[in-house]
Length: 256
Image (cartoon, rainbow, N blue to C red; front, top):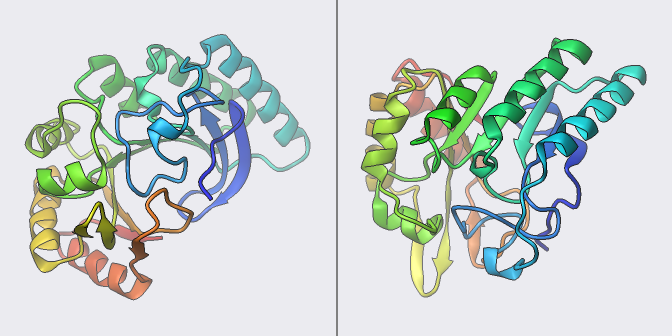
């Protein structure tokens, strides 16, 4: 069953990719607010959560995060990473850059060895303030699930104008200072076959990886409930095969 995060600060949870992760949700706690409506989103469909769509206030985020970090450090269990995720796309927040600055300052004060990570669908990287903020965090994990616009429209369901070519150009502007993340899956949605693991898909995607030149790639598959119930998980040995092809480009690739 899909579910929302019901607070500004959530966890800590043991992340497959990041270690002991303390989550930060900048999106509403009673609804979902996202520029994608992915068929695999653990928070469910956007339309399932039509409640008050207000961003969490910067001051509230700062105060709750400081209190939680102070408590965790006091208990001897500081987080490995502070992760911006939650009920939608964190970089949509109008104060995203200022909140990142607040977070880095708190990290430096309470747990200087912790990393600051952002899980983003990369739809806001046309904004200069978002790019600046993403370049200041330790792990800016940016999504690109396919090289083909038709697949992105089917799998990610962008809620506004979206172009793979434009997104790739913006990702290339990071000059390698990014982590690229891709969800691999197969199945069916609204009577259409979904599969970004075909040779055509993977070969085209690898070409874009080579163009973007990220410092790392993360490939993963389904691990939690999805709103579309006809999707299939891609097993780790198949993901490892894709990762091996990434590594022939001299780019590290992790499998989760």
